[in-house]
Image 1 (cartoon, helix red, strand yellow):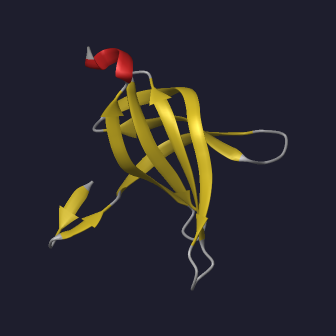
Image 2 (cartoon, helix red, strand yellow):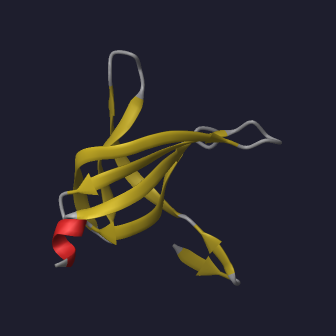
Length: 94
């Protein structure tokens, strides 16, 4: 996350998506810090909706080709993807 004026803000991502037959979009790769990261596995998904605005964010925890777990989300209101968090997978923490 980027800190701007003491406030945490999520970083916009360039994401390649896969849209299945139901039209549900999911990330298949994204560019992070200048590198293309392929999504090897979607570990978890959930949807959050802002109480006041009713705008939804679709969250994904994904395993990247660099062996990190990324939390990314799609902001339905803006139509943009964002990076929120990254951590090493448990296998790489030995």
